[in-house]
Image (cartoon, rainbow, N blue to C red; front, top):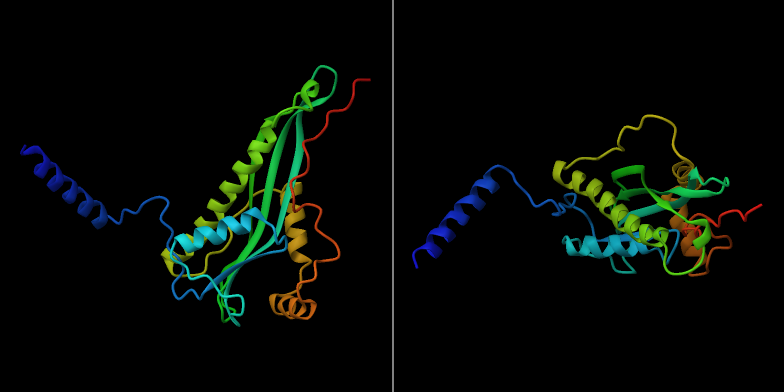
Amino acid sequence: MTRSPLRLAFLSVLVLALAACGFQLRDALVLPPDLDPVMVKSRDRYSPLADSLAQSLVRAGAEPAAPDDPAPAVLDILAERWGDTPISVDSRGRAQEFSLRYAVVFELRNGDGTVLVPQQSVELSRDYISVPSDAFGTEGERDILVRELRREMAAAVLRRLGAAGRDGRMIGPDPFDGAPTDAAQAAMEAAAALPPPEAADASAGEAGDAPPADADAGDEPAAEPTPDPAG
């Protein structure tokens, strides 16, 4: 009967010790200081990544911006691109293993235009197998990886925001060695082609809710590559 109080006392001491050492839960998100009510913008209005980020920010304590907020903080998803690269073939020369790549370019601006997290790209990749003889059927490995990569991308973006929140300063992109892959290059080129935030906001106000004339081809993951038919 005396074990329970002792156990509680031990746990209390352990928690205090961890707090004194600066320990934080791995998934705890610290938002940048003085962050205004925030909205998540994406060129794809149905982006699952934007929805996931918006929900995560609210759970972390961010105040969601009202639709008529004149100067919200903006987590801007500038571009999303997917790519499939064959990495192995079977005995008949047909691609059967691919590298699925997902690249995103984003930045975070406060309501007064201050850049909290400058424009930068994050790229994730996973390998999967597409058996030529099983091109049709149940949900494939690629479909599962698409969902996993979206969840991991949301976590990666939130880690960048959390770094800015913990340090209280602007966080730049990670150093990168080597040439970007096709998916990352396409995402960066798409982001570079966009107008400045002020011009984009003005154009959006003039256009209203009309859908864009041309959609970015790389916003949605392409269908699983179909192996070449046997010759």
